[in-house]
Amino acid sequence: MPSTKEWTSIITSVYFYVMFAVGAVMTAVGVYGLIQWGIQSLAFESYPLQYQESRCEYMLEQPAVVKEPGSAEVPEQTSPEDRYQRCLQSLESERHVRQVTDLSRAIGMIVVGIGLYGIHWMIKKKN
Image 1 (cartoon, rainbow, N blue to C red):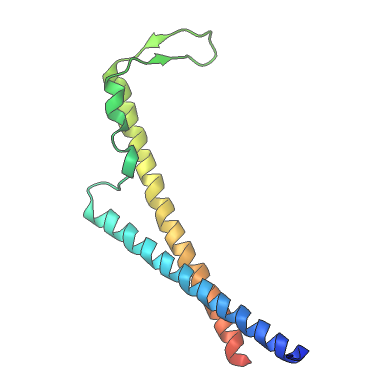
Image 2: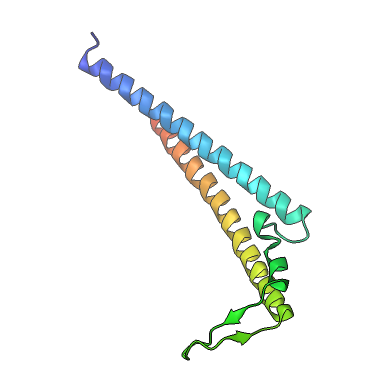
């Protein structure tokens, strides 16, 4: 049976190698996300939103009832073109938010992954 010192050494080694692996995987996922962000930013005319792209087409087909803030429920019909234009504006806003979020997520994964990997690498080299 291993002694306490050997168990400590084994547990420490397993911990450090697991942290190396976690750091490497986080870095790889972050680099993948950064590459995806770059391709989507450069290759497409506008940043893709995947499944939400076609939702504005339904605005032209459905009648809308708009409730005015601060008043009783008074139905007001808006033209399909107005709703369509508002929908397109909200899509562009969401597109910008998605692009910034994807970039920040990728950079965050890279920074945390490299930091985690680097710190444990330096500690392991000292021992």
